[in-house]
Amino acid sequence: MSDAKKLYIKTYGCQMNVYDSERMAEALGGQGYVETQSPEEADMILLNTCHIREKAAEKVYSELGRMRGLKEAKPDLKIGVAGCVAQAEGEEIMRRQPLVDLVVGPSSYHRLPEMEEKTRQGQKALVTDFPEEDKFARLKGRPKAQRGPSAFLSVQEGCDKFCAFCVVPYTRGAEYSRPVKAVLDEARDLIERGVREITLLGQNVNAYHGEGPDGAEWGLARLIWELDKLDGLQRIRFTTSHPNDMDAALIEALGSCAKLMPYLHLPVQSGSDRILKRMNRSHTAESYLRLMEEIRAARPDIVLSGDFIVGFPEETEEDFQATLDLVEAVKYGYAYSFKYSTRPGTPAAERAQVEEAVKTERLGRLQDLITRHQREIQDGMVGREMSVLFEKPGRFEGQMVGKSDYLHAVHVKDALVAVGDLRRVRIVESMTNSLAGELI
Ligand code: SAH
Ligand code: SF4
Ligand code: F3S
Image (cartoon, rainbow, N blue to C red; front, side):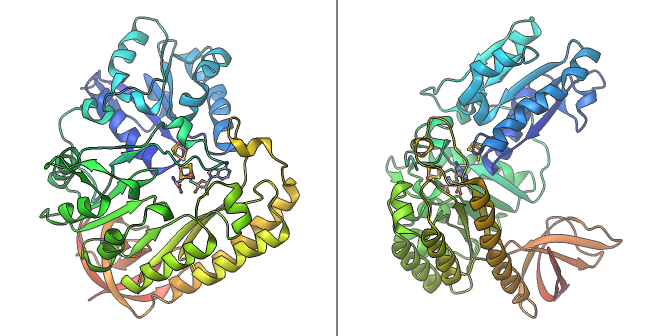
């Protein structure tokens, strides 16, 4: 295998891109590529890009600029751009960066092998269609390799919600759910390869409505209960959800499915109804809070997580205060907050923008509050017993690191624990970014 071609993939953006990168590596494995961690060694470099905020999109062009030297040193090197920037700006990338050989949008990854062949013949390849066919079904890869204990599995893609700030409906296209059988087959395959925890992915994963083996449409809860039956699978998670698609069956599953972890990422974006309306979120702060209460009633120990945007067009200090109030009311175990970033082609881009300095100041205040809650919730784990799925050796001799049910990083000092073990642990200390525990 020493003459195998080498593939270097750099992944930006969300977990769906992480999953897609794995699948692209598998698909190109069928073309004779093996992955490398070094761009200098690579025969093909793929940037799997994100278009969600301006900074993320700009990174692509600066990264491509840095590759000029590599291509000069190795004229045969193929450079490809995949992901959401490829979808949104494919033609422009080809124009602006002559060293790019291949541009492929997220819905067209099954075309990669034929596109790679085209570039080998010295041609450029650009595909950014939204095909009718299922990209996943045709993304076939090389023979099975052993995997780590935790894996992503995309079950749903695209979005029909059209929040006024967001590019996802344009870069990932309309909502699509994979059939139940395809999901189960892939899950079984992952389990055979050593996977113990599966995180189901989708831009709107709780809007999942895949075709079941009975021909009926299955919701996410039903899919989860089916996965629950698989021997060898010990944990199930799902992300990202939308408040409007949190149905009763899913809340019930959070309360009663033992394999479904007590953690929920449920973005709300703002605590101001005025802003939520302008964002086209079609829920209110109050309906969100009521939903959170219902979820907590079903699963009292659940750790909640969210996303926030500050400085959305026309956001006033009063609107922002409502966001702080909502955060205070929910108390998130984790939360991700961003300054609003103007995205070309989205409705909010046309509206009166908030000054950058104001956004920065609000983001600081919001993050201080979130960090304080996050800290309190993490510290509150001390003394409790929970399960930890061990993923890798820690930084120190004899140390092993894993994730708790609540997604906190936990390390123990015990050489007898192996990667992939799910063990009961008592938490003894809370550090900056992790917990220390002892095996029970
Ligand atoms: N599908 C998910 C995630 C979308 S992108 C959902 O609906 O929640 C992840 C997060 O990025 C969003 O929740 C939002 O907080 C943030 N985001 C999206 N567009 C943005 C923009 N234009 N500016 C700043 N943050 C944005
Ligand atoms: Fe974007 Fe809104 Fe769809 Fe989430 S629900 S992907 S924020 S448009
Ligand atoms: Fe980014 Fe596309 Fe994901 S824009 S957040 S990589 S869906």
